[in-house]
Image (cartoon, rainbow, N blue to C red; front, side, top):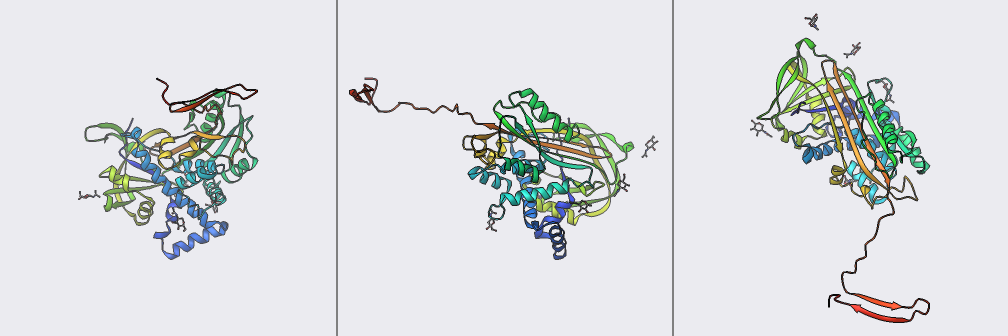
Length: 417
Ligand SMILES: *[C@@H]1O[C@H](CO)[C@@H](O)[C@H](O)[C@H]1NC(C)=O
Ligand SMILES: *[C@@H]1O[C@H](CO)[C@@H](O)[C@H](O)[C@H]1NC(C)=O
Ligand SMILES: *[C@@H]1O[C@H](CO)[C@@H](O)[C@H](O)[C@H]1NC(C)=O
Ligand SMILES: *[C@@H]1O[C@H](CO)[C@@H](O)[C@H](O)[C@H]1NC(C)=O
Ligand SMILES: *[C@@H]1O[C@H](CO)[C@@H](O)[C@H](O)[C@H]1NC(C)=O
């Protein structure tokens, strides 16, 4: 297993080049605006949502990297999959729960309503699933317990804006429900994520899924004949053998002096690219990287002939995001304070957990990446037992019920004497 001290980002060149308003010249801004307004009048919310998604990606990365469970481990996740899943959840959130989700996702509620966000995701998902790009797919699904009746308007928004597939399941049959969810994700990720859900809380009434799959061929493939075993330096003390791919070719690179990081741009035979970032010091890069870096690198990259070496590898990661989301201020949805009354009016719901898995395979021909996010929604049981403890001075009355005569009455200050 390779422990990569190599930070890999798959970015959509379309989104990243076009959207950083602050760095674009007038002509480019105009092109971008024309493209968006040609589609519909909500260009502004689409660009606000996609720029919030980019910021969210980096904030989530930093939280994951800082987490004790990930120390010395690979990190790989799909921020877009997490954003889509949480945005779909926010359709049914109200009050403080909704405010926290919005602010956690980076949506400014004085500029964007939930409807704006829904329409923006509609546009973004439509673009991602454009039939002319067969190598990428992205979507959502909702599994609903057969006896649970969500508000029809909640399901309708999920279907219309998030292109959700809907399924009825019997969550009391836990093993069957787990199987149904896992089979769906397995199919959508072409077998890459076959066990998103390990187990389900028995009080689950709804399960929200988002998935993403991408398979790209390098615009210039590596020659398998040049792939050789080589050492990968995990840290000062640890070396591991890897299959190192090699090519000598005209490639786009950038050296970011401010953070001592070399950037290699490997385009796929599509509008997508992989950026490989090799820092002198990983912590410096991790703490600094933000959407503007990607804008800058893609813009200022220079072509020249390099002898490049990139390991061939397959990694898989799995996270429960409850802790990091809580650290990002999304707290209420997990407990008694959850307000998911937009999903169901009468019943008190809460999120039991948010799980995420991702895979990345890189070889001579290209790369395949897949991810899925699952959000379990449970019925809060009313078994919640309130506590009433007489552990301080109290009064006592002994009465006969029909006459209400007070037989005894007193005050207990200290029950021990
Ligand atoms: C939200 O947008 C308003 C209006 O542009 C701005 O004043 C405010 O600072 C923004 N809030 C955040 C958290 O960015
Ligand atoms: C789909 O892609 C084609 C070609 O790249 C483009 O002309 C079209 O506008 C795209 N459609 C959407 C909905 O983004
Ligand atoms: C992409 O792949 C197709 C088929 O494999 C090929 O015809 C085309 O030239 C490639 N395009 C680029 C930009 O490499
Ligand atoms: C790789 O090596 C094999 C056997 O030596 C040879 O037949 C083949 O043409 C080589 N492939 C390339 C792309 O050079
Ligand atoms: C980058 O490397 C140079 C030379 O080793 C060093 O002086 C500088 O402090 C480094 N900058 C950062 C941000 O680490």
